[in-house]
Length: 129
Image (cartoon, rainbow, N blue to C red; front, side, top):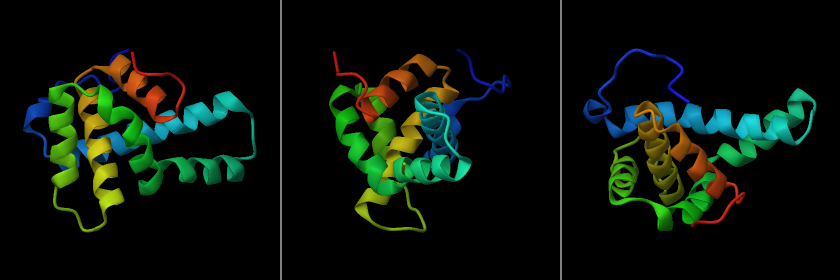
C-alpha cells in the first residue's frame, strides 16, 4: 500500500515532532480499524476502547514488544522522537512520542507493510521472527 496523499515529501527533513504528528494519526487509524474488525459496536464504546489503546501509557507498554525488532535506522528515529522537546513531560509520554515518530516516518517513507508488522507486535497479534 502506498501513502494516502501522493505528493512527494522528504521525510529526512521533517522534525521528530512532525513525524509524531503524522504517526499519531496512523496509529490511531490502525487502532480504530482493528476495533471495527473485532465487532460492530456503538460509537461511544469504540471511542472509549480506542482511547485506552492510544493513550501514552498504552503506547509505551506496546513499545516494549516492538523495541527488540527495530532496525538501527528505526531505533534512531524512535530515539529522536523520544528525546524531542515537548510541552508535556513524563517517560511514558516521551516514549509514546518516539513510537509515533517511528510510525510517521515509516508511513511517510511508503513502508506501510513495516507499519503493519510493528502494529501487529504492538497489539500482540504476532511474534517477532
